[in-house]
Image (cartoon, rainbow, N blue to C red; front, side, top):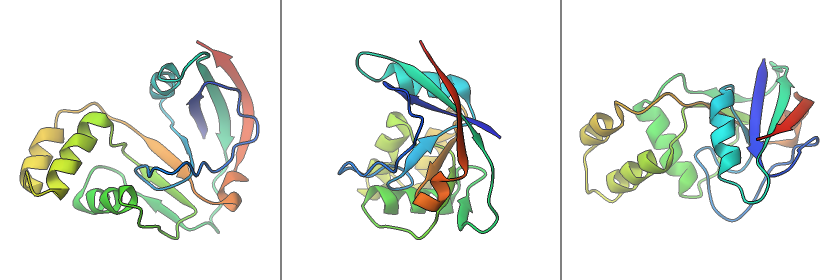
Length: 150
């Protein structure tokens, strides 16, 4: 499988990023199978805008959590991870909570909207994908294939 990572630098040797704020699937090295999405990620960076390309070779011995779509289980998992609750997965894959969706998640967790209202609001968002490599063992499934600047 070919996957992409948007950055401001060439990343030949991916590392798990622990930067003090929590992402959808916790700490990790985040990629996507959607090249256009990786370009959007790269364009949010200062200075250079680089898309890195990897070959991902799945390893069945890894503990993998896969969400095929936004679901109640996905929502609960993202809320937990964004709250700093850690998990034991090597890799987590599924839809991404972009800034707009995250605003809805915050409204939901604060009790400002119901779960049903959350699903109505996110229904018309464009498809997204992310795969978080959360352990060093998971990182070894990636082989750098190259990069290009936008």
